Image: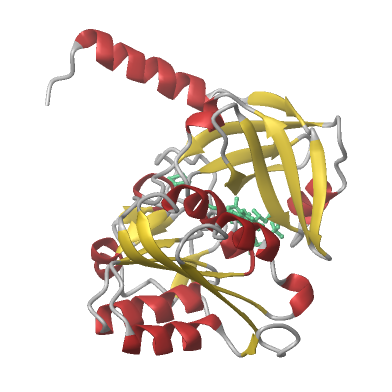
Length: 286
Ligand SMILES: Cc1cc2nc3c(=O)[nH]c(=O)nc-3n(C[C@H](O)[C@H](O)[C@H](O)COP(=O)(O)OP(=O)(O)OC[C@H]3O[C@@H](n4cnc5c(N)ncnc54)[C@H](O)[C@@H]3O)c2cc1C
Ligand code: FES
């Protein structure tokens, strides 16, 4: 397809702006759990992001890492929500209000909104990209079943926010913890299985540990329900050039991070089984 020259130059200007590193000032830091914090800042380009897209966050002097957007707002108020797992996220957690971060993006394909009866399944920090999705899907969806899980009550993220977003629509929220300290004891996939056995859903959205998403993929295939799942892989360039995020023939930064059932079928030999390490070697996910 040939693009009109003016339209194509507008798109390339937008791409260049997206790829440029912007320095943003942290406006607020919120502790979500003992290991997870949300950082809020203002950014015009993120105002146009789709739910499920991510930014590359540069922590000066340490590293640049991918983070999903946990808030997208038309006026540009944006947030990321990070678990402290290693060097870069530890340095990020030490940042306070008024300090600077670098960001580029938003990158990748977000979730596609659907109408009808939808199921949203999230575990741990996998709930992050599901927040802006939930915020938007309340309009087209006729019913929302939200299943969220964590190991313990302390680690259960965004419960108040989910309850607030779903307070005026036809929705059911089911929380699970592995130790039973809140909600139902067990894992979210058990609840998803019970729901799918009884009810027909038009779409399942999932994000969480890859084993969880793989179980959701198998359930979605069994109950012939389309799935969109947001994957994580090592990312460096975020624009499809370095190859560090490959899964089968797909690059998670460009073709994802949200992959559909059709795409997950294409990469089923690796999905839920292998990921690449920093040297590009295939390593087992189990
Ligand atoms: C598209 C995408 C969205 C993400 N969104 C979130 C989010 O919203 N919240 C959140 O807490 N985490 C998110 N992550 C994971 C986050 O990027 C890693 O936890 C972070 O990079 C760890 O960096 P570190 O230096 O603290 O830890 P390290 O000790 O360097 O690494 C710990 C683990 O984090 C992963 N990791 C490290 N560097 C990268 C990298 N450059 N790209 C991808 N994974 C890496 C690896 O699995 C590694 O084993 C996302 C990852 C991707 C790919
Ligand atoms: S991160 Fe470089 S190709 Fe995806």
